[in-house]
Length: 373
Image 1: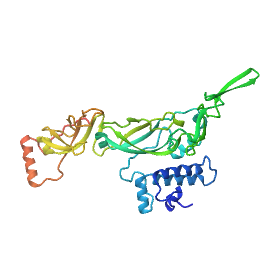
Image 2: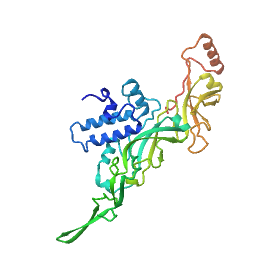
Image 3: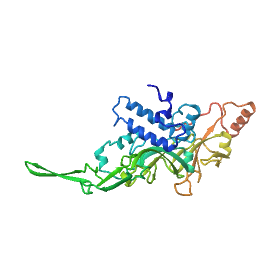
């Protein structure tokens, strides 16, 4: 079988090259219903469903589609495009479009029958330390069961209606009695006619098969507040799994992960950074400027005379912003002193004179031992 890269993605989806975003979504859902391994027992169904997903991944993204239309190739691995936001796999709800279709086609059916409300879904968003300091708006993309656009989430098609289930009288459960040696045993189970909803739909929507929700790829912008910490979560209401036939929709839980920074290390709201000083600046004292965490920020650091290697100088209010506050943590500047590897004749004479003035003998002098820390 030819690889997806060798095929026409529009042909895989069965749409024209000028198809709208809505046409592409609709074509994907219809083809996915035909090819999903849960309903299609053809030996090639799984491979064709994978190809369909890959084609939809490109054509449902405006930037990837434009690149494909222009160059005729599938864009590179996720994360290579401009404006890309790195995000981890969904850890709550579903793990991808294939799993969503499995649920849509009745995977784990008994549990699905008993639940009308949509579930919360989770996604991990990775940002830089600079974005965590300044706050940022990020676009994330994920798969979910979304309200059906054709029936507005009702599950009812044109001319259809929702009625009280005739078998359970709206309770969602049926009771049966079984005669045993010990007497009559009564048991309650989910109503098979309405699948536990208490309602029946006549004239169901063709697009969602009466569920009121369809598998979809969602794009949403989230505002990351300044000062957020690694592992903290944000809740985006009503963007989790859609409920069955208009029931409550779950929320999207975004867990923020912060990438390690090249220069700064974070400790709560304080930032730690290392600077290199010459022995002259360390001995005499100096004022130096170092880049801050905020864009374009320059922080002035006062170096006291006699600063030693390993000393830490605190600069108040120049660390990370405190979440939902105008205050900031501190910048902790760790000092590294660089010694010259080579001296010219004049520099050597100056240092030898300094040694003479301080009584620091260069030959035959004792070096005191200190405990290794």
